[in-house]
Length: 182
Length: 182
Image (cartoon, rainbow over all chains, first blue to last red; front, side):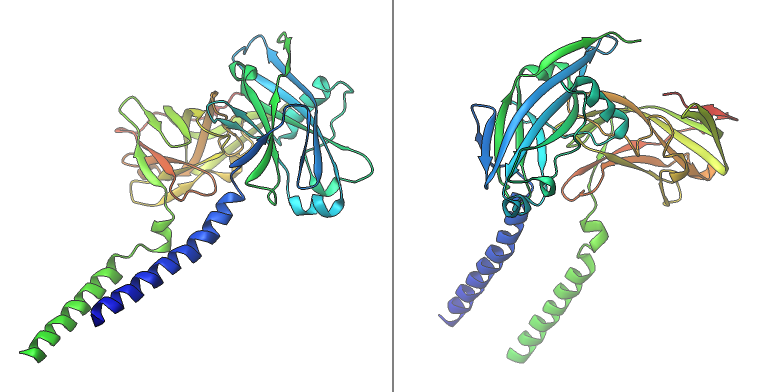
């Protein structure tokens, strides 16, 4: 009977240790994953007090490499500074229906393509919540490299470290422009 | 008998504790990715990428063009150039390569050639796209035969996989000057 009591105490302490360590690890993982992505039917949605809008989505396919595309996406964010600070960072990723994920390219040699694809020929820089204001929408431009075959079925997910695992999911139907190689 | 029994139990406990202390994984081995070995066709499949080793070349010097200027680098050892073809699988990822020499030493990619065209250090691999890349090492000649190439995702490698490619059975032919093209 005494041994059983010790075994029970050991089992309870073991379970408690698992729960305490497991909870913090699960929370860390939740800040990386987007398990609670909310589908947005239109071009605007709100997440943790920040309004997010998708303004442009335009892809470029060059005829000498027709299997791949560069996709330019313009989004804008608006909201209180305190809400923007709670986002910590901003991740705008593309998803296919089978779970593949493309992240924005930060290479300056490729960012030149944004000026070619944007309607106003400007590059407003990567998504950054510290620049978000309440008075007017702040525009950000992202560019991605992905297979041309993926352009038909894409979702744009926008989230911040502080919002995850919650994220906004926008269906994306980019306009495709075809270019001839020089 | 009771004292003898207790003594045996304490001794067995000591032996078990000693065995556990000697077999517990250290920090480095705990944080190593799982090794996946490429097949005889030179193709290896990691969790996040598929890679093919297409060629291993050896050279005394390497040249390439950067910003319309010719750049050349030589070495007191030998340049080992691994030509690879890599496809991303689930998400955009950067990779790192290590040459595991025949003597057991590990060689990182040469930092002096980071700006060479298609260098793995600056490349990022996207799901659904296959790209050519090169990993360049500076190694002593006796590290090549019997060594192997390891490719792993950069950053968090815990619970991830590294693809290992067997090194050459014979010393690759030496080129006095190897030209790297975009």
